[in-house]
Length: 172
Image 1 (cartoon, rainbow, N blue to C red):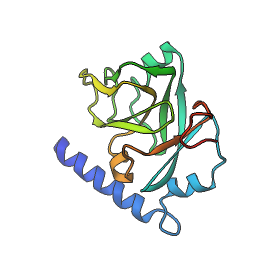
Image 2 (image 1 turned 135 degrees about the vertical axis):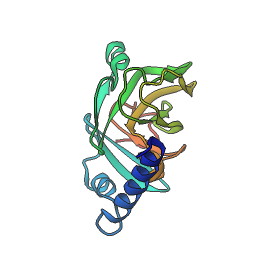
Image 3 (image 1 turned 30 degrees about the vertical axis):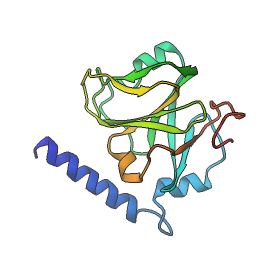
Image 4 (image 1 turned 90 degrees about the vertical axis):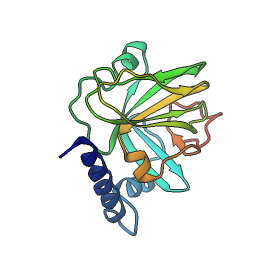
């Protein structure tokens, strides 16, 4: 199957799975977000006009962890991701896909945990910088196409204990 057709087929199957997979009209990730504890270091919650979702995450907090990211991994389960945490908002943040083998959605958030920009379906192994802009303090990477399928967009809020709670758009 040509790569372009695979991407469209994968996105369609993902959207159908999210639409029919949940209880009471909620996807499994949305149902988990509603029943999950408020804040845990190994999980993030997202909410917006589209609903809510929860992802298990690995944290990338040190310069070395942020530099490695999700490089050299052949796959990532659908409900998982990586949360990059900077000590303070950055004047300029851009990610690339060097040595990254899976397509990703790169979700850039400000100091409140509010989504500012999404680099959707970043191409594996591409070294083109994908800028998030200025004022970015948190970046969430999830499987490519998932943000659009779920409705995650600018304005979506992230909940996690790494966000200073006095500034958090969605505190713990």
